[in-house]
Length: 345
Figure: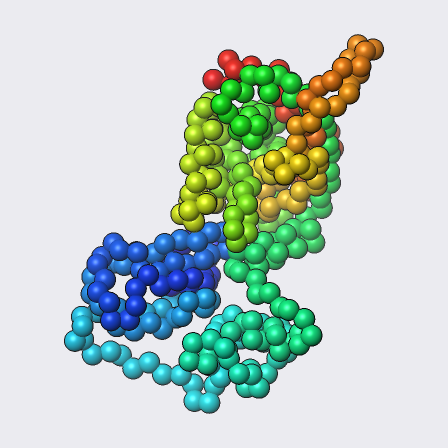
């Protein structure tokens, strides 16, 4: 199992592209691995024949473990043995069994060659309900967000922004692209929000790298736009579109998903008015935005209909306070309300 990122300790072998006995060329897709952030296509590092598959589709495997044997067609295979009397179970099944207190020896597996799967363990633990196994990404999201809420002192600040100028001047760019543009420039002005917490210290990040939350079929990813403060709106639109396509095609790499210093999560396209996001440690903050909607607002004593968006910031109170958060939101609001196509260039 290859190490596909600095924080990766294990991966799920999603799918083999070759069968035992088939010829393999160096550089060909050999198998897919699901990490906690994305699915990566792993290429063969040498040519030969896939002699033996040791990790089946859907199994969780630690980094460095052997998942298959590749060699010459007539090459003797090394001995592969199992512990005598040990139940045949996937690593995920063993972990779930420990968590739920289920005896693997009492189960009949439904996997290949009778192997016990995690779902078999969960069904045994919940005989009167339907158990749904979590994929690696969804499990990691749950673990990280739980840890964030338990360890990070969140506080929240919200503001409404008049998006009339953005709607009129954004051209072919999306609302999300303009939000990234505005966040990047506000972070450049308010560097405390472009920071993180590590071992009791505040880390001020030099680069402004914005993670953009995107929904994929198996969970949620946040591809990163690096050096976002130096990108024109057209460049942001181009890079975001390319990352979204890679996410849909399950082609995101570790480089695409690591190194964010701030995160934007926009649910406006789903008709959501506002929501409260959860910080992704070690980042200091995350901005959650809703839809652009027509609202009646008072301007100079008169009621007018304007396009308005609600923005909610979740911030780490160990790093910043309410005044810093308010000023940062004010900078974003100003950038959006004074937006012109020339500024976005």
